[in-house]
View 1 (cartoon, one colour):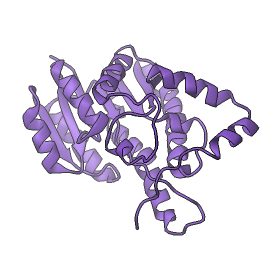
View 2 (cartoon, rainbow, N blue to C red):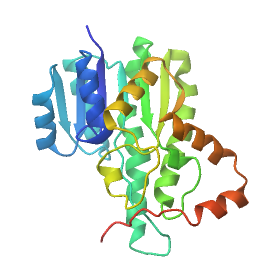
View 3 (tube, helix red, strand yellow):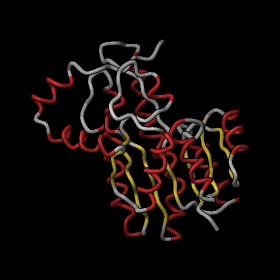
View 4 (spheres, rainbow, N blue to C red):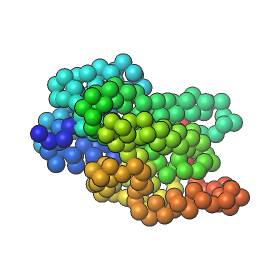
Length: 254
């Protein structure tokens, strides 16, 4: 039997590309997103068995019901990919941004935890499996104008590292994939040049390769991996000078 793969944020961008690529490899996929009509359309286009779940990953009970349904009808998944996430510019001075800040952290961090939680016990029982989280290069350093997104992705990276150590004895791998700029609905909203932006399908193939080899942490594309290393080790005074004049992501319209 082929792989069994769960993917959140499957209605567009990286999630959709991952679903299509795994389907071409013969995997049975469980696809999660809020937009049921788009999931239905995606399901019809795939050459393999697929199950769709029109749920919000912030809904704990819905995530648990989804996991129960998939395990009952398909089996314990081999790979669970927490890809769903949101991004808006935020500024602390604006009261209107407080709810946006909470929503970004809630979705990007707790949504990942909500997705993994109902599967971990089953993965432990079979002593194998892969948990995959999509973080971001934006989590390496704080980006002005994107404080909520940066902190959510930094938290995701630390969460995945802790989780990796917690489940290692059960032969469960945890992979943290930190993309740079990838063509998607999210990046289409950016009104500034995006260096090394990568085609979505190529990015999905690179991600699947990293998951297959059970990489612990990988930045995609490779050019952004170099940038990420530089960002990580730059002294604060240099980073502050460079970042203050950088592009700012638009704030959410209220």
